[in-house]
Image (cartoon, rainbow, N blue to C red; front, top):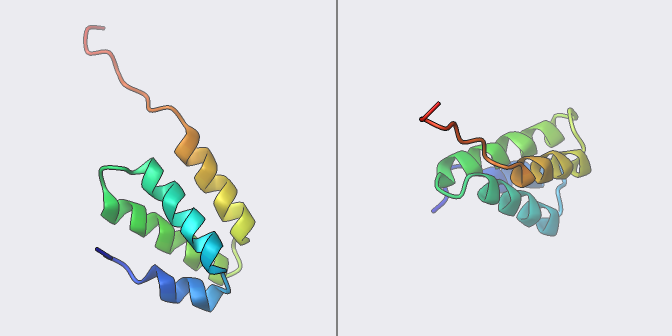
Length: 78
């Protein structure tokens, strides 16, 4: 299911299909239980590339860092 039309924005930004697929996959790894949020992150990254605030490589690197971070779980016993 697609919540956001990030594909159109990616096309406007000149993002190749393989790079868009990588970006979407990374955000899905970051938000595995919230596909809407993963798509929103993908859309916002595509918009940033389209608007010249990031390159696709910078967006991918940031997404890789987010996907790789370890979740912080507070210990309720403290």
